[in-house]
Length: 382
Image (tube, rainbow, N blue to C red; front, top):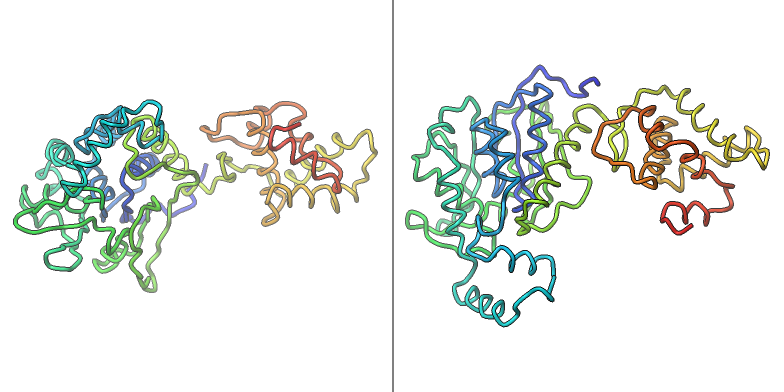
């Protein structure tokens, strides 16, 4: 595979806030590291700040281990099983009187106790390693006491300040707000959930933004001429912002890795990751041959295939943009989904074609006027 972006410059990362969805960014970081992308700076809001600290420390294996084994009680003072049932809406498993009592206590105390998160930060974030990092690290939070956004350079902070500001940046609205060094803070997302401006104002011109679509305000940013902002964004749902469950985090890390690989190498597909090798002519011939086999009993003409069948297929697969390469990828992807082929692998067209097996693509082709049949195939109702 060939990189789609220039690996020569150093890149700065803008890490969006999004609570428990943050594992996605660790997976994406792994893909960037494997591709040899050099990171010169990181700016993070909320969980993006926590991940920024992990990235500045440079130990991906440790970051992956932490997220792979995350659970509610590491972030909030709650019972893991009860919180999991509550988040998943499994009311049958809940001791409702006990839950009501705990919720009442939370309301009375004005939010969830995040002492476990405070302790987690102190155990995980090593100020000396972060300050010695070759990467600049910026933490974004909001001072409620001073009514202003803060963009803090980690190298300028003491050990205590660094730990406090990481906690301050991650103060989600559901958390109990407590004073840090005499002041109140709120999650940085209340003013800037994706801290692009910090990097731009500090002179970084090659930026990769890692989205989580977390709650918060997107601060308007003017992108100066000569500054390039690339985006890695999730192609599937990442779960709730308070869904601190190991299994969900592992899924999110995997998705982050493969979405970053799609970004880095220009992979085709929506739910699958296809390293497109075919030319337009090869893709056209593949689709045409499949249509000839599908319509053999009806003796479809080549004109009918090109003017009716393939345009109809493109419409049904929502693949009308692009050329035959994109349509072939969409057809292979639809066939793979129906055959329940794992998406967690990078395939060439040939590899995915062999994985789906004989006749899978042909099943997607049907007379242009008969859309009910294809609809049934794609929904598993035929």
